[in-house]
Length: 91
Image 1 (cartoon, rainbow, N blue to C red):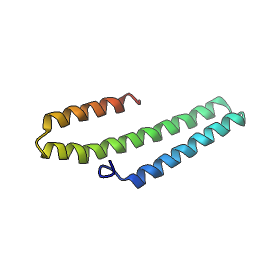
Image 2: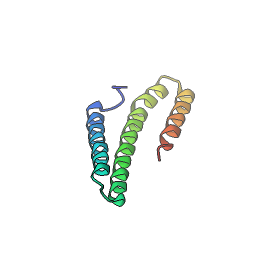
Image 3: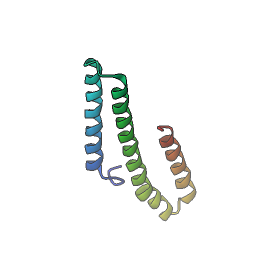
Image 4: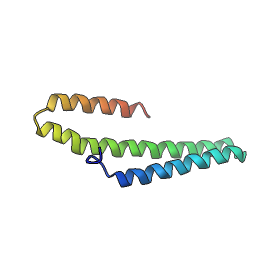
C-alpha cells in the first residue's frame, strides 16, 4: 500500500480529521448550537472524503496501472470497479 500513495500526506490529513473530531466532541460538551456542530461534522466528512479520493487515485495510478501492464487487465479492472463501489458508498 505504501507504494500506491504518499503516506505522509495521508497521515497529515488523518491527524487533521482526528483533531476536527475532537473539536466536535468538545463543541457538544460546550453546548454549541446544533447548526455549528453540523457545519463542523460536514467539514470532517469532506476531509475524510478527500482522504478516500487520494487513496483511490493512488490505487489507480499504481496498482491498476501495474495490473494492466502485467497482463491482468480484466481482473484489475474488476477490482478497481469494486474499489470505486466501496468508495462511492461513503458519500
